[in-house]
Image (cartoon, rainbow, N blue to C red; front, top):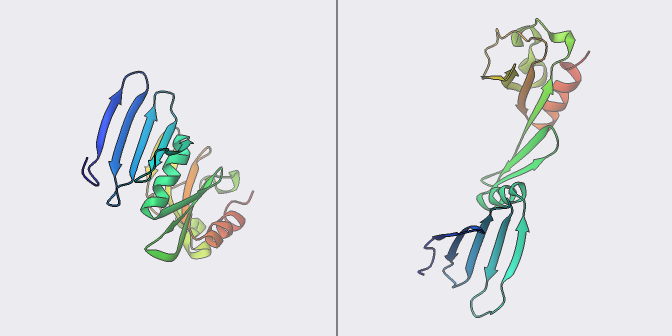
Length: 164
């Protein structure tokens, strides 16, 4: 196999294997198993024993994000993304269920961006998603909102807008 040529192979009963050699002659193999785990093996040129790591799909995506420079840190309702090309840029995306106090109000009524700096980028309503809602969008009972901004803007959104 030539360096950087990607080879894939279906392994019946096991899953799919992807393998490539680096310019240095090291081999990297990734197995997507039928059980849902991802296994990564590396074999340095000249060595006989590979190193291995087994990951969940979430862990494998995190590794992929690290390798591509989009570093993501997540908790239950929030994701923070840092981009390697823009070292000082960290963006937080957070979901909230709207409180009763803002039912019937619009994004414009609440002056969300002016008061907090955060932006509502989507609303989930009755299993339907509204992407990039307009300032005249009216919140209803049961809405879940997806808000983007810097960490301090999200905290300000929570403390000033999401009050009961």
